[in-house]
Image 1 (cartoon, rainbow, N blue to C red):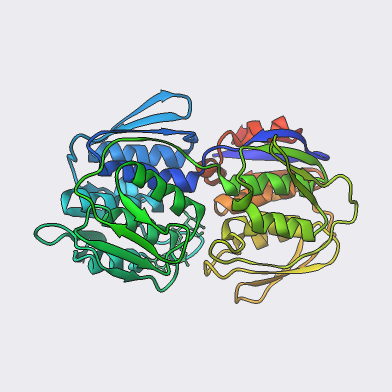
Image 2 (cartoon, protein in one colour; image 1 turned 30 degrees about the horizontal axis):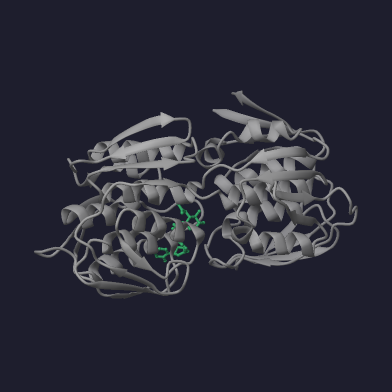
Length: 423
Ligand code: UD1
């Protein structure tokens, strides 16, 4: 199995260009199933997760062609199968996002249950409640979930989400675009990826209003057509490089950033003493001027609150600054797997079993053998490794490669000493 070796690297300096967002491109690719015509997506990151959804689309009948670097074309003149198999779905939870488009276009979808994962149970009850409210019959059997639209297709309705789930909002929105009548998604997720998906669907001929607010209104249309679209920049990758500047007391110019999308991260870094400046060139994160970076508390929340995906990288940073901080995770029930790994590197983090962590900062971390328990936990360990004495050996890095494009290349470009080795 491949590993990353990370060495203490000194301040990271230079420029980095952010890739298209993983969490936007997956629902966009699934949504392309809704049209018979060709859809072209630009700024598509080269990631394992993108390869997985490409395989799923191909298994359903799409032709997916790489037109040039970061540009793909998806053409689905006909859906050949409306079943997504275990082999593919089990590789990535977001595979479930093909359910809404398949159901809308063919009236039937059968997808293997995505199951749990290391960061929590992650049920899909809200997705299914949405499909059922639009009139679908839901059959759960042998770990497969089948949704069957009524004669004449799905019918618009009001769907209230008990929690603003990102995936449920995306899946229900794509199911509703071809429904008869109007659908309202109440207490919808407001993440930028939802707005990107709505913009893409509207370019395909959908009639969606209110994406990015609590209530999304979708007026059903007869059919969608092909279009072209550029994926939004990855706000989690942006946050990771903001933290790379902060934790190493460096200075990084981050290009291809939407500042509004990273507001909570900017606010918390500023509270901690880091300078963040937006210019025409991009975002400067300046942490080499203030030797006394200090503790700050964070609590994860749905957007526009502090993103759960940046919680673990931020915690790695908090272990190094002066003072004590608390981190509260409210989005997932089991997202502190990195705590044990950071403590193995000499951090002083205590958890109370109720998703609260208390971090005593100003620790000199030490290189150790650690495990990337999930994608973002992996990024947290790389950040910690950059300031730890000696060498940090990170295993199970396939998690990191699922979601960060050119990860090593980008870090090396900023002066990090990081290698990939095959064990
Ligand atoms: C997406 C992101 C992930 C991010 C998360 C929260 C993608 C591919 N992944 O995941 O990186 O961490 O949003 O910002 O975009 N829930 C239910 N029932 C449901 C659905 C969700 O109870 O039917 C719960 C989950 O267990 C979790 C919470 O809602 O506790 C948030 O999940 P959700 O917003 O759906 O996250 P994902 O779409 O899976």
